[in-house]
Structures are given as C-alpha cells and as structure tokens.
Length: 120
Image 1 (cartoon, rainbow, N blue to C red):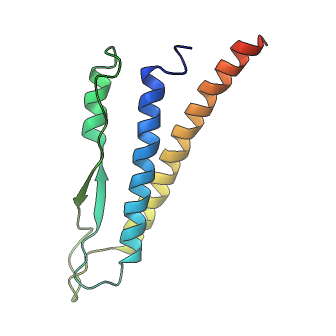
Image 2 (cartoon, helix red, strand yellow):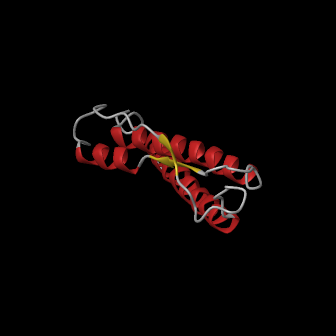
C-alpha cells in the first residue's frame, strides 16, 4: 500500500489542489475584467514545489503552500484596471491542461494499483 500513500501521490494531490485554487483566482480575474482599478491576482506555488522536489526522500517533510499575489497583466487602462482578457484566457487554458495532466497521473497510478491487486 506504499504506492497509494507515497510522497508522489501526496505531491500530485497538492498540485491538483493548487491548480484548482489557481483556476478560482483566474476566474475572479475574468469576472473583474471591467472593474475599475482591479489588479489581477495569480497563484504562486512553483517555489514550494521546487523545495518539495529537493526533499522527496523525506516523507511528509514539505507542505506545498499556494500563495496569492497581485500580478498586473500590462499597463493600466484609463479606469486603472490592468486585466488583459487574452492573457487571462491563455492562463486559464494552460491551467486546465496542467490540472488535467495531474489528474491523469493520479488515475494512472491508481490503475497500476488496481492491476497489481487483481493480478492481471
């Protein structure tokens, strides 16, 4: 049962959760595309994942934390809003691919466990 509860699965789960959080943040940016003075937000968890990758031999040593930061897309419009619709849509598409890839990896790992239990 080590494969079900190993460090790789834990990190994959945290990456899926981080991608879901990023999707909520990006959706908020899209919802506020016409809000005067709005600065788009972004989820940042790459530094935490890099740290987690360095200590993968130590089980449960690192908790991947996602932080939310303001990240202007470009120059402010007359109303002070810096959301650029095309960039936000590209980020949503990229995040969707990332999220689906992590889910596929988890599904593949679970299929391997199922095959091992069934024997064929």
